[in-house]
Image (tube, rainbow over all chains, first blue to last red):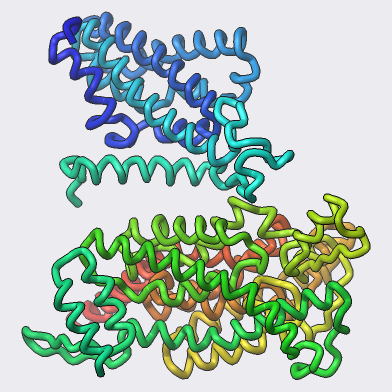
Length: 215
Length: 410
């Protein structure tokens, strides 16, 4: 990491694993449950959050000395709402079908706790460069979980990945379907997203027991 | 004695290693352990976990055998090889060996898969976490084959058992710590994951799916197609019911393997009540809850609020007591709701818990024909609420006693 100092690099790598926004801080769960039935939707959602969070972090960081602390939440909301509307319009213009799949959840990025959380916890207290890296790191941490969950849910639930039938044709009975395999419809329902996230949390904490909370 | 000594020696030899729980489990399962308590003495009842579990299994055995006969009977009835039973519970059409063997060879693999997979996971976790293998799976492993459709593919059952035991039980800390009944969780998993194998008119009669496939492939004439709809399914679709009330009571109807015979379930209930294993409060109150809900629906149709054109009419108009005979309600109320781990612990709580199970079962059954087996969802729902019910019962008791104390001292 010659490009970044060690401290800056940590801003990106930390949220990927030991300080992951979803599995450790348990933020942004709603969208992780709602849109991960397909891998493509997970990826697009990740990109949308990457854009909103990294740009938003920079904007808030630039404004941090002139925002009166009493109305800072409103200012943050306006910034994130503006960015989300940009994402929404871009999706509608260039990927209409996908924006229909994501439906209300693009708009709900506004209420994604990760975004408000990073604005409050980091962007308000740090310089724009660092805030940008922090935004990238956290949205990548979010993206990793979304993509893992989306991968397993689409593969086991529909037998496809990015819409391509990787396990064979369930109607023509080719590939694994010839042996009597069937898609698991439960994986497409929200409870199994919760269980999948739970399993990731379980695996992560049993590999690194320092992350286990006292109770 | 030789086997016992050998087992004991093996147990001593592997003590402290990863494999020790495995030998320990076999040893305890077959014999009384030699180990005695070293520190202090405690008075204990003779009914340990193993005996409690074995009692429930004994109560399930008649249902298992009945299920084997019924599997063959439903198959032969659908193919037209036997006539419908005509002379009561001991009809020769039903209790024939040819019926029994079909069922035996269909059900035995279900039992083996259920136990091998489930106990395999239990032993794996016991070895990993270094504790003894608990007896908790003994009953679950017997319940699971009894509550699934007969032709469920074995790999699906295995996947569901893995899910049910790992997510339903082991993540919470194993036997005695689970929130949801593992056997029901296994069934719910199958139901939502593979609905085509859990509902419809092809899954309840063994061979029906196979024949449908062969007809589609053209290797069998279409006239050989067989099917059998459960009473609940038929009611939900407004079809004519071909079974008499006595058929339903004796259990000569299509359904999951072991839940059809209300008569034998009643016998099992008596056994569980007299051996003090199952809570009669939960059994009684869930029956009451179902009857109350059934009566309400009967009143609604009698007053003409819901007319015959409504899709709910047939199920609502079913005699309120008949709800106890059809579907898995009786089995659920007696064997599933009374699971001591997931049910309410307080006596008052048990009444509330059971009543709501019965009430909600019939509610789901009538209003959601897509989920005809309401009792499964009702019990899982109330499992979640059981600790809350207990909390308020205990707090209510504390409050009442505080008041009494105040009145006395004032």
